[in-house]
Image 1 (cartoon, rainbow, N blue to C red):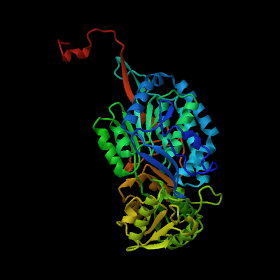
Image 2 (image 1 turned 90 degrees about the horizontal axis):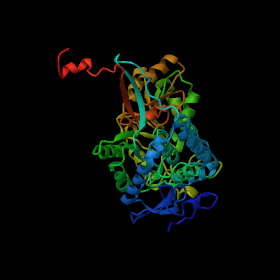
Image 3 (image 1 turned 180 degrees about the vertical axis):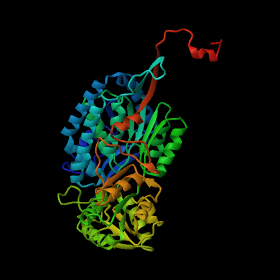
Image 4 (image 1 turned 135 degrees about the vertical axis):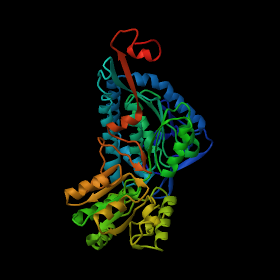
Length: 511
């Protein structure tokens, strides 16, 4: 039997919706069969808020079977029927917005204002976008490209999709995986991170309440090593989509390759934040602090490396440190909180380890410690600014995934662009300048899947999200995501009604 934990009704109003377990298969909640239990922990307090039975391989098999059984009916539904279902889905999510926001803040530790104003409305908007997009699965127009034939292109669903979502944005990332897949006519089995399954399960329940057929969306909540690898390697799964670290992404690719699956990877990042000497310094400082600290820095597009042209460098460091010191750490459910804890004490200690090692070769300008007092029991870490590190140092090259910004100077524009590109990653970047020529060059020469100009972080449903280099390949959101979740089929009709074609002479007979 599940354990509801110690969270209050105010913090966790949807607790009663998990009474039957943390697996959602063929339209209903069930208990996992691995024989092991796992606790969802509130990282702000260290308290267990929900304990459940983890999924085993049998649960994955059952979920895949449910998705496979639902596929023919869902794939043959008209685009209008799928669109209508997704519009209803968006409406149900909007009705349940507060429950979703509180569950997200409880399991992740993110401030309630972030869940309410970013995660949940973004998910509702994304659902509404794909409700419209479902009607626009178009191929190339018909034409007589050979002269004797009419060709056209069909876009068809792939089949069962097995997706794995991370713990930093569990609701939004679940939506990014699920929505384009089902809008295109696929069915899906999603494995959320075992740390943060609550909003993925609420998302699936909302889908059923909206009338999506049983088996179209299934959730298995288990470990990556057991449930995740079994899902990725399952012979009845036609495609895998994964968001997470580059190291784990390599393992996902290795397992998926054995069964020649379609593969979509959104992996790590180390986003550069390039400030040219004609930038609005006030805008750049505000953008750097917001872009570095959103979700306590646990964002693969967060600003992590600020390169500031030397005339602005000292003022940028001073003003950024001062602004960071005004950011209020606290209870995620308190109205005055700006920054919550990291996802766990283990992640907090990992971030602290990077900073402690950096003290040997760089200067910690502000932060660099866990707070005491009432926050000591949570996984909190102060906003941290580091200066004086070398470009090849660990703190500059490695993904930290915490509230840490490193600032380095540069002299020429060429040097700034070169340093921005000088990591294995290429997910996102920003450039700050009053010159359209500098800005245009940055968008062209910085190798990243998204380059913002005079801003950092905003995303919209209509535009794609995905990276270059070690940040993976493929796109979430936007119409481009359908390229990930559809098969492209060329159909060709003979228009001559001639039994013996001219090209047949290559096989038999003369002209």
